[in-house]
Length: 312
Image 1: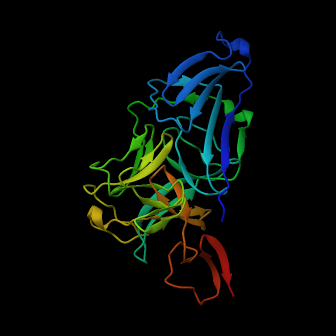
Image 2 (image 1 turned 180 degrees about the horizontal axis):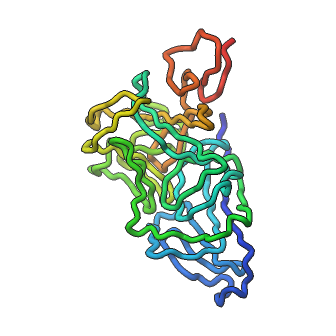
């Protein structure tokens, strides 16, 4: 399938009048690394660069009237990615742009496959500042409704913990550019989403596949990646087998990500750390996201190469 490049643009407009500010249009009001706060059309606007490698440092909360975030989600709509922003959005603000998912767990399923569970926050779900999420976009351009305007603040991120721990794993939100060079302690235990299809060590890695970081991999601000901490204690889960701490060389080269909407599996992808983005999982899966060894013979619904199919 040919990739379709989509530019996803976030624009948040609150309709405040220019007279509320002394600053003139075009004036820079603050510089926070990859975020520039500027007066545009009479509004105090946060311009977020998706390509910058500058570290985002917000020492104190900043009141904002509008937000512009232009990010390139290469591939067809619905291809997952990772997203973290320094804003709290009330329920429904991002629903027109796409589905937002929280990581709810990671472990080895019954087929001895590493899987991440990601649950849709739904139309009533809030998007919290400084927290990494998975996102499946379904629009090229998004204009936030005016009712999102109340209490909009660019949140402090200096000294704020942006990681969430799941047993031995950390889902880390990134506000700084990171490149993994030879000898980096994260090599072999960091994961993220592949930004584009390419061949690595004789294996074809698809766009969006969640894969292990190698030297030379990098990730930009406003994304997320997964890090394995061998020293952590892995909590037991009813959904997965209990696992003792494992050596880095025994970690999988890819991890499946199972997306759940209203307790139903709706998509399965795999994850690569080069920029914090995804690729379609291949093969057969049941509706709980468990990988099957071969084409099923029992009637019912399944996933095959990322699409839902019915065996009759």
